[in-house]
Image (cartoon, rainbow, N blue to C red; front, side, top):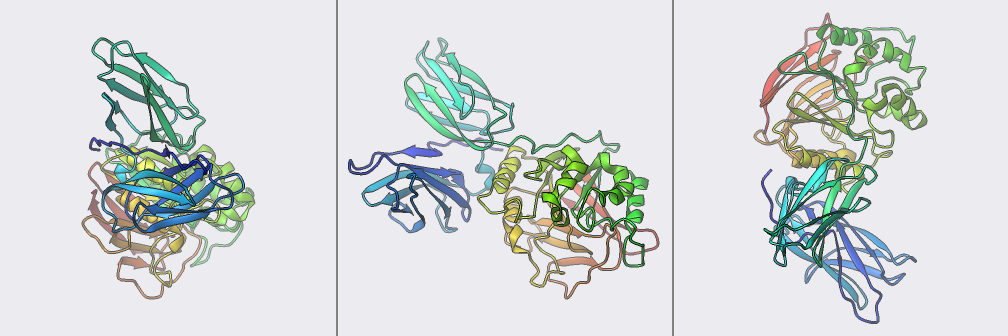
Length: 490
């Protein structure tokens, strides 16, 4: 990730207002965003009951909100796609009260949470090693050109203040530990002598990483993926139903380095009693399984049995999204049950996703969740609820997306953030709802479909190379449909 120099990108700015108005504040999060993104605007100290309008200074209105009895307001601002890149003035106004701040519009999401930050205020130069960190991760802050002996200090919201005196060369170096308690967005307060400055900072929530996998047994790790797996215990196997024992044999015989379960592990309601059937079959590779949660899991007690069965490997129960590494690849697992865990642009999940991808600028990245954004089995060819997940993944540089939910197999052409075919930079995606439960027919194949099958159970195997990947859909014994190929990372 390149070094980024910002002159100002404050998460919260205080401004003077007329004497007859209350002291008001305006906060934009994130203060760095891409065209088309949604930014959360919040304020306090405004006159209760008034309508606050947030505009690009001298331009069109971006959003508005009614101030509550506590003097606070909240609004979601959509950044116009035609807005010029660079710093944009933004003003919130209600009656005679107004507050102005600036928003940085950038070309790529990777700048939304830059790994490094350098800027100058007054005569002091400051360099910060990262503006995205995991809890307990050290952050290095260097102050330059301070008067010798003057105090430098830094503090994250909800964290301890660290201090150091400038040496005779005018330099002070601080090492700041990220607290375990702070989630999502935060701010970093810096002091250089009497000068104070506040910068946006993002702390990735605890429990969004999972226990590490056993070391890979191959130079290029092998990932196996499928969803929609186990029938209700005792339900008989037929030619078109309940082949989860067969697909589990594929896993045991192949011994992949990681199993990406693409949701709906256990039918019909995912109770603990029902999970006995999954445990008997796919449970044989449980130690290497990193699951994504499906909609059937949420039919029982907010998916409590699912989180009980998989434990820490499923992420925190109130989220169900997390990330991990396998070989040289970074892998992100998301929760597409948007009625239970929000998928909106301003949601904690999407904000976490953008920050996680920015914090892991690897060459190769894989993402998986349950509900496909695009599929020929869907009447319109797309599922709108997961659009923010898809867009954030595409803008964050993800190479491959895996989903289930639809009980068939389909390989899609690489698509961009808007679902247009982009073979050079798009994300290749696979729908692999072939874990064994039953078949589901398709209507007409969509233009993005490159390979499809509706009558074969099996598992998708992916070889994860440092610069690309190979795939092979392996059918259960007795079937002959297969699909294979290779791809390169962006």
